[in-house]
Length: 269
Image 1 (spheres, rainbow, N blue to C red):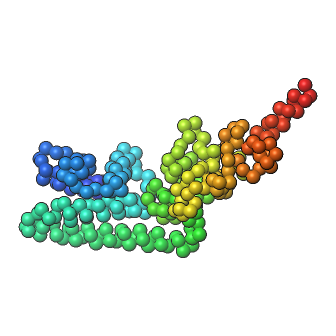
Image 2 (cartoon, rainbow, N blue to C red; image 1 turned 60 degrees about the vertical axis):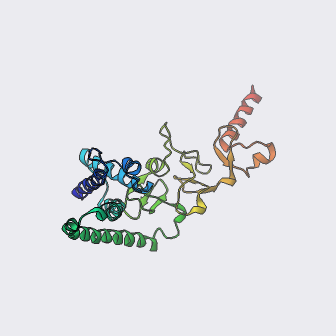
């Protein structure tokens, strides 16, 4: 698997350079140059897959690759898919009959192997949906390791049912929701368990859950319409709280308690 990643990256660079050389011999391989100079259609998703592959190659060379075999295969599939399309559209039509005959066997083998990887990904994605993750679409997210919608979030973290990657709360905040707190304390205070792990706008695969707030500690969900902002500390709190009905101000339980203590101190003074 180590050499598969290295050779895949080398193959990407070689094929991109081959296409660029048809524009001018001095050009160096770069996706943006292919887009702008050679007018090659490369989607944003394909660009991201190529960038991720380059990062995997660099991590492998310098630090050792941390992804498991299943994750690497899933990450390689879109890159191979792009290369086959790139060959068919950009390179093969410009080859001579003799050149085509020389590489025909290799191209056929690559197509067969890509088909096997795609089948593997489909099989593994279909398998978990029949058991544990079924019915959990409201808290199943995109896994940044294998790039499959198979990361089920549980109390205190999450586990991917495709590549088996386990993530902590901090990793989920940084990798899945891309919203790390600069102070190292992710999220907001949960109005139920008070842990500082409440997140908004969680990108779960169930789109009906996009506007919900979700606590990574107690796994409770709150609709955005049901929560307001405490005027005392700015934390989310329930709009149906009795204090709001009597005072007209939305205060969380901690701020209500603090105000009562301050009033008691003033009374005894």
